[in-house]
Image (tube, rainbow, N blue to C red):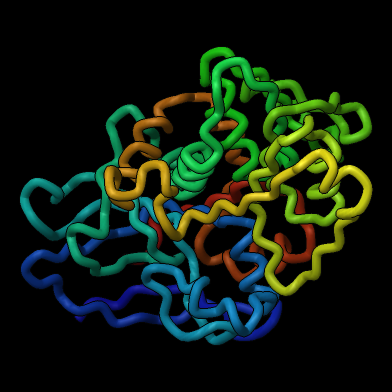
Length: 326
């Protein structure tokens, strides 16, 4: 048995690092030593605060979660490591896995996806976020010539904006209340505007701010028969909207998008693994480095998570495992 270390949420707003015993990998399994993990700020801080509604705890299980929500629970899904033992075609290769924050782990070989040589380890932790963005675009089906806004310049919103910018003929703007996000938007190749400065009559708005105000802004920006694609996760927070006035007369639509299932437009033609591999290929784009806003050692993870849950600024805060224990 090998001993690793893992981060556990132990109560609302509290976490700790605990030892974990690892079995030797069996046939068809890999032993992965973690190099970097990323914190998915919206979902993981919601879990850290104990804010997942009781009726959504099963749906919100992470692929390799241990324990049950709300706590104690080992949660996370942005993990890049190197295969120490496993099939010859994987041994020694960097891989991405939807695994929590842990120094090493054993999983089935088909649970990991190789990281392309063109993608640095630090950027590869964004694979889960870009996969969410890919699924959102499959749900949205942007058309050449459409006018589109992304409301909410967090990790997911920024990733969606970057993919939309690369779609020929699409006009896209990023909308956020924080002018400090202007620098990030510029690096992504998109203009950022405040909500009260955004132009309306849009064909499509992707909402990613996880606020009632942001969702209302998204509706207000639509042209007649336009669509809001809702990618936010609100947890146990109520959402208040004004659906009087123009909502019905202009035949507006709010449509949900969630990464747990492959979008209907590609379901049956792409698997989850193929979608994740596509996301990793897209991360060869240097612009995604703009989403990496800080790095801390694994030993500091309990304090880092508490700080993020309290509102500290970050898009993707990375956790570094280099030189630490197995």
